[in-house]
Amino acid sequence: MTLLQSFILGIVQGLTEFIPVSSTAHLILIPWLFEWTFDENARFVFDVLLQLGTLAAVIVYFWKDVWHITRDVVSGVMKGKPFGTVEARLGWLIAVATVPAVIVGLLFKDFFERLHGSPVIVAAILIGTAGLLLVSEQLGRRTRSLDSLTWLDALIIGVAQSLALFPGVSRSAATISGGLVRDLERPAAARFSFLMSIPALVAASAVAVKDLIALPNNREYLPALALGALAAAVVGFVSIRWLLNYLSGHPLNLFAWYRIGAGVLCVIVYFLRA
Image 1 (cartoon, rainbow, N blue to C red):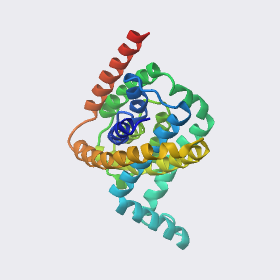
Image 2: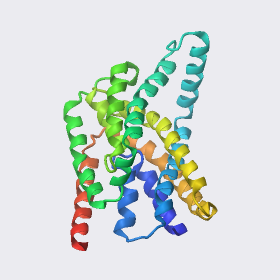
Image 3: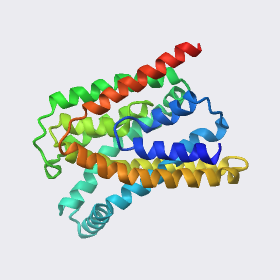
């Protein structure tokens, strides 16, 4: 992988991790469209480690929330009042929402990883998930704030997040849609989605770091990885700010139509190359 390719993929990761169009699909389909060839032993690890950049972006953007949630969860446990504050309760709701994807991911890890090798399947999933965005906009009343979130809401949004294990669904698309179905306002659904992403990105990055260490000649990948992660961090920070502002007054339809267009283009290319 060249530094230019890494830089481009870092930008793609930063743009698509939080915007509901699937970073995984784009990291699979863009190299495939341009016929880039990578070391297959390192490619999956590289794609996951790009998330270190977007992990940094979401932590920096929400650093006050992260600090207050962490402080109040620890303080609440030590005082025997784990749900004593709004922030502590939110922290436990994030934990509940994280559980379903962890269970599904551990049980079916090999199955989901095999799907990454088929661009046409990824493109089809990209198209199909457009319906999830359109339906959630129709079903949701968008009347509830984040403070009204319940344990059932968190569990349902967590189950929605497990759908994102399919490459092309998008974690943000699944969780924001889940929040809308539970009648959250769009910015509130997006905010919870982004905070939920932190434990998921930490876990995925930790596994990928372990895999990177196990790769032979792993130092060769470090310059490209560092450049890609830096690009992902900067672009990811801007993407979070833009999306929160956008969703305050616009529906998810734009992203649904983009998904359909991008997916159809990739399907056409796939059959032209066959």
